[in-house]
Image (cartoon, rainbow, N blue to C red):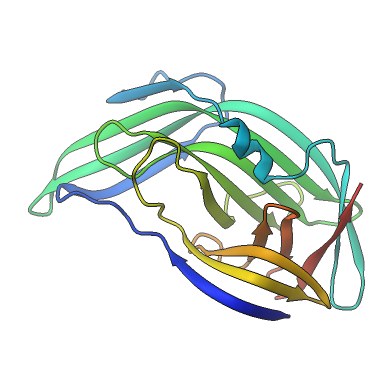
Length: 233
């Protein structure tokens, strides 16, 4: 595997003095959780139409990946369009003491593609969804692509191998992702262009490489075995 012209894109957090930490959770239901008291409720959000083009899997039934020996794995692709409750909590501190919190809520739209290995245990999840920006107070919405890798076909486990903002919309906040861009990315004598990977601490066992043309260009298993994109139908 060769990497050429690698450039670091370092996302920077936009912080105010009073902001100390944030947490967020995405629920699987389709209605706002009544137990959550929202400081700001942004209501039902929808993806920007151009954001939906960042995963090229519409009407795709199967994806193929190959390893260094030419071994082929075929993944069945299923699609789901849904809205789920997304909550984000900001804790406000004064001299290391929490004095208040801000809870932002919305119904986030997600275009989700699940890739199940036929006859095997690998499970990939690629989705585009609405997320919050990083500013304090009433938050604005942006669109992200996220890729997850699991070796348990019954559970994706929620760990990200790749995440990237694809549309800031009206947000002026810098993205929090730490991205590496490869102008030319060569895997097993096949070259792809404009490929990205992201640094994530949530899933150090797996890594995913992405571009807008192929979607998932390559990914690794926990043992380091690398699989590259080999076609679709």
